[in-house]
Amino acid sequence: MSHLLFLFFGAAIVNNFVLVRFLGLCPFLGVSNKISAAFGMGIATAFVLVITSVGCYFVNFQLLEPQGLTSLYLIVDIAVIALTVQIVEILIRFISYDLYDTLGIYLPLITTNCIVLGLVLLQQSSLFTLSECLAFALGAGCGFTLVLVIFASIRERLAISDIPEPFKNTAIALVTAGLLSLAFMGFAGFAGSAV
Image 1 (cartoon, rainbow, N blue to C red):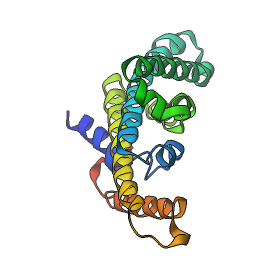
Image 2: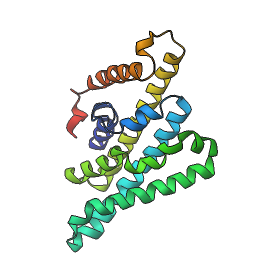
Image 3: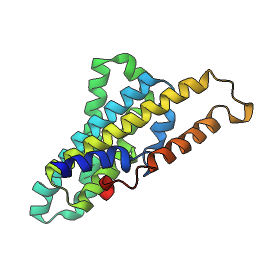
Image 4: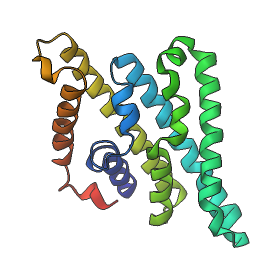
């Protein structure tokens, strides 16, 4: 059980996919203007991470590997990711059209979000069990949501602050992201950084 907690916190905090591994920067910078949009995108991405993690685990290790078709892992993983994102897009449109409208183009772009494919590839190379896949995916999703919400709250405060003209908009966002990344990298000495 403690091993699963280490995987969860390792993926969420110590080896955060956005601030330490630098994956998923497009939605990180694009959807982080408002906390509500950032939270919605984080939850949608976390849901996609968990579903694709489990789906790819079963397809790869229960279907493809016994048949000797391990060379098809990547192609099948991309298909599973695309299918999952389409289902999530339909669900969000049905549940909250305002959130669907706010997320805009970034919602279907979860398909090409490198966090999702990166998670699946990391799990395969680490030969995780199903429970380890779930803990790792949940940690990655929670970490992504946490970082998006923190960054969005900082950007909302910066929008009403008096910032020198050269640092407005993208420049201050990148400086803030760098400082936030340094803060998260401070956790690198913890034991949960195995993966």
